[in-house]
Amino acid sequence: MITLYDADRCPYCARTRIALAEKGIEYETVEVDLDDRPAWIYEKNPLGRVPVLEEDTLLLPESAVINEYLEERYPEPALWPADPAERAFGRLLVFRFDQLSKPYYALRRDEDGARERLDAELAKLDAALGVLPYLSGREFGLADIAYVPWLLRARDRMGVALGSFAALSDWLARVSERPSIAAELDVVAAL
Image 1: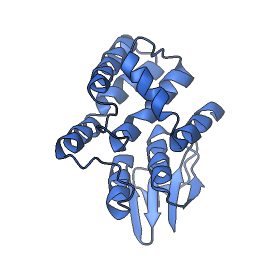
Image 2: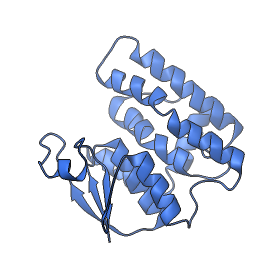
Image 3: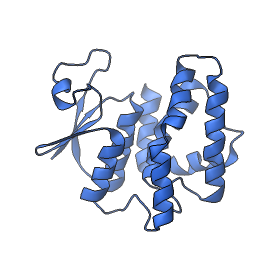
């Protein structure tokens, strides 16, 4: 049985919850209080961060790595496209995710210029979604999962209007119909 060390408010954890749901994998959750991290979480991940996935003797931190592991360990349904170019582009987006996360967190800290930097990154995503229907290519997948938790939180918790990004807004509406994302919307609403 898989155990996920998790925190509802953490968008990195949301990535792994969504991937597990998309793959239909059952798991147990151990909730970690991020404001008062228990000492034992440092035994699971020396950095004290979540998510951490535990399966048998495997302890694996970092959502992007966990999701790649899940994709390889449980290949069906596939969350990377068969097309190598689409897969490479999706992986590049995941690799460059901090280009979105840095202005996102700067906006949360109310830093000067953060909104403009975030809007610039949203415009890049909007342009990519103007070419293909998903960040992962022609089908929903791990690149979409990598970004959607932050976009939901930006829109629903931070009041970031996405209306001027038509392709991004359409994509977010489309992926929100998926049960895995609808469940995450419920989590975000309860925060």
